[in-house]
Image (tube, rainbow, N blue to C red):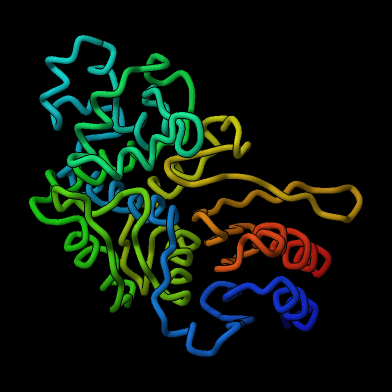
Length: 316
């Protein structure tokens, strides 16, 4: 029997006007809600959850040996860095892109407004690579969708095919994901930091792949080592969003109400506006929450922590 108070969860989700919510323990869906029934089969933009999908593709490419390890320097993929006046850029590694410690002078929104500026240029890769460094590589995390675009370009180079085709062959179709959309930059590189559209149940399949340590229906799609390494709390994130970050995954914990209280670790893909894929390994749980009214109600992560996580730990 599920420990969840499903009626209370549904009331809270209805009150906060979430677009959808799915809870699954292992392979079993415990709860599924859609504000409008047609949302179940509609593609929706997952925004920066795209980054976590890209992380999986980087892991698959490294597992296959077509990308070097995370300590490899990126200048072999971007030869223009050999001519950059700042020699520190030649020390940037794949890991620095994954945990966003590359050092570029960047502010995603506000201030420098780097993300909108990038998307208005004719070449997003050149825009990112020519930015000055604010920090030596590996010293400070600054949330940066340009890092994700560089990773997408590297996957495309290494695989010799588009990021979407590589994802279709090695991730989407093996998981049973049959429909999606994915935006591209002016050079035709699929957007690494945003721009992927998925159905809620397909977001769940991706989360379950991580819950099951990269295995799906008896096949290892992604190495257990990559799952472990990419979801470690590697770097502290500064404002506007504080927390811990792994390799294109957010990492956190919640505290049980029982005595003595216990910290329960979880990690999650996070997309602007309230798109979440949340994995709680110790409770065999994946939660998908999507939102399209983010300016009007409580953020879905608060709904998860207040109504779902609290019910989970009381029931165990």
